[in-house]
Structures are given as C-alpha cells and as structure tokens.
Length: 192
Image (cartoon, rainbow, N blue to C red; front, top):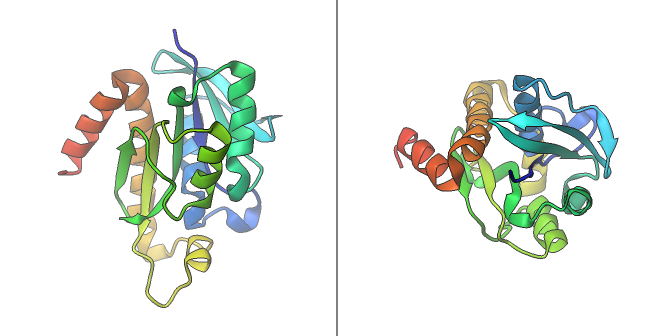
C-alpha cells in the first residue's frame, strides 16, 4: 500500500488565520479533524499527523515555514518517508479560480503562487497532484499580495467555506477513487 502525503499551504500565525492565502491550511485542518488526526506534532518544520484516510496511510503536512518556503518543509517530510512527488497532494488557494469553486489537477506550473513555486523548486518537478481552492477574482483596486493576505469578507465567507469543504471531500475522493475518479466526480458536480 502506498504511503501518501497531503500538504495544506498557508502562513502560520494568528494574523493570517482567516485570510484567503490560508485556504490550504483551512482545508487540511478540517480534513485532520474529520479523521481525528490532530495536527500537533512538529517535524520537518511543519505540523504533522499520521494515520489512515479512506484506507490509505497518510502523512498530513502543514508547513510552518511561511508560504514562500512551503516546499522546503514538504520536501523534508517526503524524503524522510520516501514519498515520491506524484504521491504528494497539495491544497492551496488560487486567485485564477472563482471563489466557491475548486479544481483538481495532475500537474502544472505555479502561476502567480509563490508557495507552489517553492513546491515545484523543492520537489524538482511539476508532476504532483493539487487541489486549487478558488479565491478570485481579485478586486481591481487591490494589489495581489494585499488581497491574498486580507481576511475573507463576511459576505464571501459562506461561499469560501463551502469551497474549503469541497476541497476536503476532493482529497478524500483522490485517496478513495484515484485522481481520475475524483476529477470526474467533482467536475460533474460543479457542472464542468
């Protein structure tokens, strides 16, 4: 049975807790709670938890390195557990997707996301699966960095929270049905 890792990207610290950029953290926290896997152990410069999700042995990784160095923590954990890149599922926010939607991808570039840039650089490949949580579009008057680090506004919180929950379900589906099955199920549900 393959050992897998699920990493949720974000920034540590109370000031970042309810920000758009911490969507990956939010999803990982909810996944961990749902499967009673407390993210408490600090290893690899990350909060980690080990256990079974959908019958698959998993390592949950919540990097504490701040977003721009996320890949360093995930790389350390992957090396220790000998988890190949294609078995590392990364959950993160994506400004290019509309708020309330998610996408599962097999691979791809980082776009404007510095956390994903770090992941690709540290893992040495773009070929790892990811779940993108839509936080867009960015309001015209906002700078990108200021927007992603801003708090989710009350009028968008319900939509955003639903997308985070959908990302949790997507992670479970990837483990249960494989990447293709999860993509087909969720694309159909979102009308894609």
